[in-house]
Image 1 (cartoon, rainbow, N blue to C red):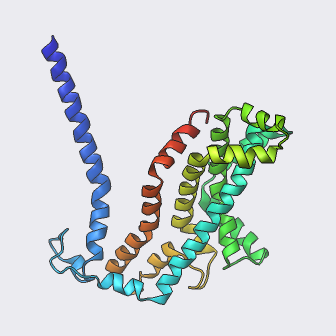
Image 2 (cartoon, rainbow, N blue to C red; image 1 turned 180 degrees about the horizontal axis):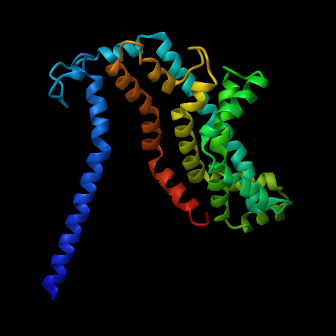
Image 3 (cartoon, rainbow, N blue to C red; image 1 turned 30 degrees about the vertical axis):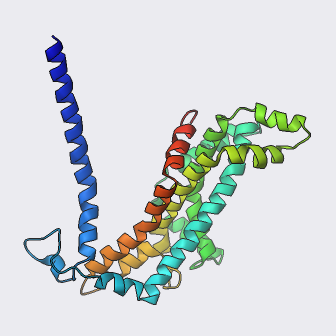
Length: 281
């Protein structure tokens, strides 16, 4: 009996490990192929049979991207928009989350339901309405137009997560500050915010990733190279008669580095913030 149970556990463990290996290969091989392609010449990309490891290692694709002022402008635009969206989203979501977590006010449940429902709206259905609104406000092909539009899609999740995180903190913290003569603002900025750093980092990293990788509205709401972002820059490498596949892969690798660095730097706080926010989500 004991042998049979041990055998079942061994097979179960082997099945789990096999599944993880298959899943890892499924997720990792495209990234490895993208990295490999970025070190090939454009002609070598189409060789048959294809090779994962190139025999003619070349940095020409990276040199072409980093030596092109227009391409570098795409990265600058992405940084400006993503950082601004992240900071503004955190500020607004923190204030909204504090209100939802600590106060009762008219239509609170209705507003909360609207915020949640926004998450279910496919972004593509809002392209034409937002295009008309941005043009009417004179924000077409501007940073504010992109930033405000991105915030429409980052704020709901941020508010939900920060509210859930603040709900895990006892209200006695606020009350102790008020007993000492402090106000709600004092409790928020001097007590709750320092304690909520893991949750804020989790929301900030997620927000940065969403804004950095956003393609649809960055394409629709910009017209000139001095306003386009990295995802649009990758698309611009698709010419009428030829595709610069190696440069596309190189730019994709360079574009993924900021998100990867952010995740590695804040990995523990990011995971901790997500799990803590999920306690009462």
